[in-house]
Image (cartoon, rainbow, N blue to C red; front, side):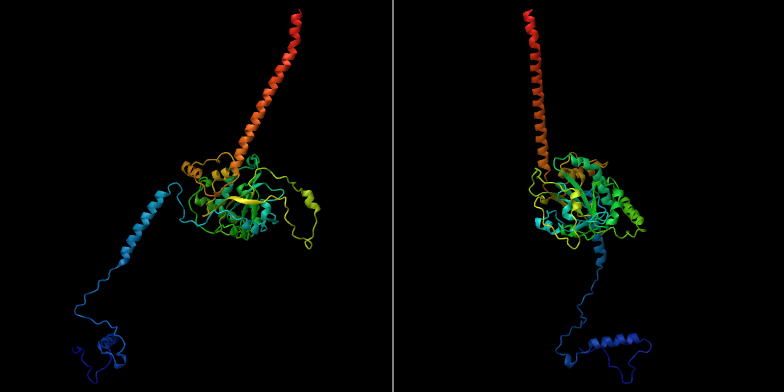
Length: 411
């Protein structure tokens, strides 16, 4: 078929002076319809040529359809989430995937010499918090977030009202609580004043304990817990900001700790899980003062075989920034009577009573049986003693009355 394009007459201008762009397009069309050069005959011709049977292509804008589908999917997900989480509406979605597996003995031996700092900046080994001559046999260690976290502060306030040192002293096995944060130790005193916590607070600025014990980092807030006592998100945030502003002059405003770090709760109990107290002699402070060793001659002392070995029998790791174990679960694990002070929101409180976040089996069940047996023994002994006293009184009365009967008979 002959080409419809006419050759350019000799002497005609090669460009269109009035419309150079049009001339360029016309040259492009000419190059498309021209036959390929002999050197390019072996290359496949990928040029699209118009045919008579070609149908016009219809371009459909799928962005509108996609946007509608996405909107419908978002609404359905939101409705389902609102239906499934009526009790604890989440402020932000998502939670970090972690486990509540109990730390192994190898892990505890690895971290037992890690140091924590008290409010005076004095270092203590991590093991000294839960094992030693002067430590309780059962110790619950609570890892909090940074020292300006309003959620953790509300948690310690609720803990202090529900679990008091006097209540722990009533347990048949000595029990204590310690708290560890990830900020600077200089903030501990102000933290104690804000929370009113009666238990000692330590600092682990390196966060090595957090890492080795499997605690994660996240900013997801999750569902609102019962221990917040109805406090709103704005309240907890503003509380932390105000406390940070107070530390501007001291230079500690940026030393509160890692904001992404979340904590957990770990209960240390005797590895043998026996209630019987081992026979050990506590070391007095006077004995410690008599032991004088210089820094140059200080050597690592071998572990005292009389120190009772401990292990974690129950633990819980936080998945969000507000995922601490609720008070009913803590009191149950510790072996305390009651469930803590209920809150005004009955639905949230009922959920706290039903939900159990941690894993493990503590000595609380043994302590409960021990308390029942002790109560029965004391009641039996008291009854026997009372019966013995009554029988003795009867014999005394009979012996005292016997001479009177003899005198009467004689009369």
